[in-house]
Length: 556
Image 1 (tube, rainbow, N blue to C red):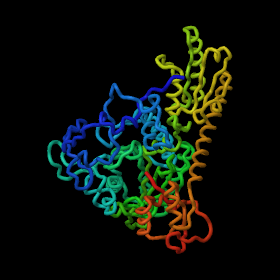
Image 2 (cartoon, rainbow, N blue to C red; image 1 turned 90 degrees about the vertical axis):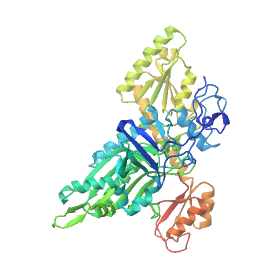
Image 3 (cartoon, one colour; image 1 turned 45 degrees about the vertical axis):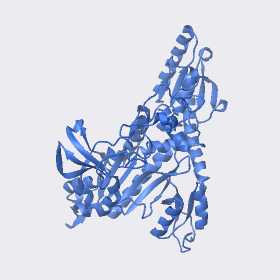
Image 4 (cartoon, rainbow, N blue to C red; image 1 turned 30 degrees about the vertical axis):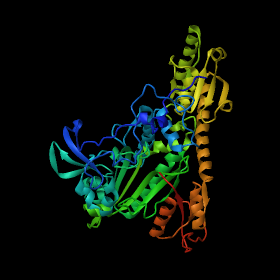
């Protein structure tokens, strides 16, 4: 079997002197050719420009290619074992599976075609669900007047450290600085105020697919970057009850996507007051356990109450002729979900994709030695591809001649393709193929002698894809459940967190006590789960009666 030869991102991020880059402060002003304007952009409140020092805590940028770069292990393209260094493993997989690369501006990333195809699979599913639930897609500008952000006090307080501001346009100082979109509640309300006049205009339910800029100091590809892609839904309603129903409906859409498509067993619940979105009265969340047992907030849905509508004067005339402020929601998932898929399912061989969101579900590797063998094998695999394509199975043939079959096996395993079909001269003669599962390594994951007869082959492939989808969810669920500890005292919580696990226990303590837990353990309340145990409970922190249990964990 040939070795997979791809550069290791862990090596590229090595502190070796020969690979270091000289960091230089970025200029205060730079040109945006597409806007035909010069712009001065500052990141964060009170910032006077960008510098390497201000971003010193982020992941280091990729060095330029080097002809004499050495692999970090026995063969190029191998990844750092997860158990040795989870972060290095994660970065290795992103590089070797060709998901993303670092952009020229520190903290940004370039999403490569294969990584973007995973995001497209997320978009395709959610777009259908959004439209089924009555939402329409539209688009808002990415430049927002700073005065809009200031209108909602808690909103500006929550986002101020992350804002990127434009102060110069067209070579002139702007009369009002502009915020590069961190989220769109403010500009949406500005427009809603112009579109909503009567109860007949409600509910108003829209969604946009867009990019967002937040000036993060510590970045991690897909999980946290200066710019990322997401969808954000915004709705306006006549009553609080309707807004609450909408917020719960959309977090349920996210939950179903997580379980049914991404095979990630999220825990659904309500955020604590301290963790609630800036400007919301309630935030609902889906929390996922990653392979290193840290929590990932994979999606959120907010009941905004009337906070933004009062700040912007978004009102309607009700059926009794009275003027009322609308009740609102917003909800979002982002490319962070791609990072969640990597960290939930990947292993030491690389990425492992659930079939329902895999850009390629089946890779076909033809094997031959002579020209005559090549003709027979290629005719057979072309027929196989046509059969599978007609059955709506996403299939690709790797017929490149520059690489050995063994190299191709490793490469497509690294990219997480769920199934591999191997076809050689003997298989052609027997009118059969070998099918290998990505989730079960070695011979246990191989099916030999599968007939090429279309109905047999299609049935077998579809069955195996469903088995893999189910297996990945079951495996992730078992891992999650085995790493959640029920606690009845603060000492038990500290012990669980020290072991890298999640702690679940009754909680009715104050916000100050919540801050204490974070400061002393590094863990936060991830959520108060919707599924709650029955019976009387006592807060493990204060001993007072508690209505709910909360889940604590360290998180991304």
